[in-house]
Length: 150
Image 1 (cartoon, rainbow, N blue to C red):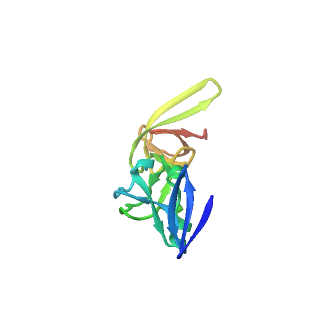
Image 2: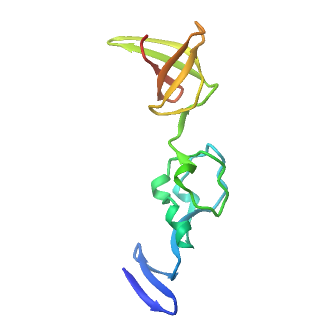
Image 3: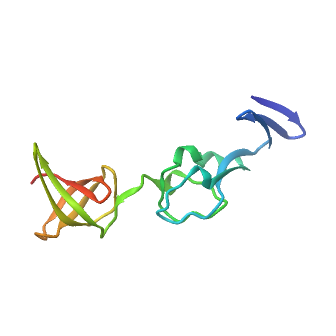
């Protein structure tokens, strides 16, 4: 619900309580602490603040990005935009991984090294440490790459 209070201010009700917001301003979620690259964001990392409308318009809501991973270092007091976060990486370049090929009931696994970063379902290349062969696959879990049979 929105009420015009006069003297350049508006009041609206959010979660059952009234909040005053100056005209020409908007509410957005802002980081309360610095977040390192690779850290997973939580709702507790944010607080609501009044910002200029353009800054608030591009800001993502804390509830929508909880569980996402920071793609770069994010300073305290800033909003988070879509390019700042993404699905958590389950495989990172240089990680030792398990390569797995499945065909029906047959399952073969081998040690490997990831040649790129990947979130769940992402295409990634890896080197089979037993054969030194480079293989293509998809991230299937933490430290796991499902290889497509050649």
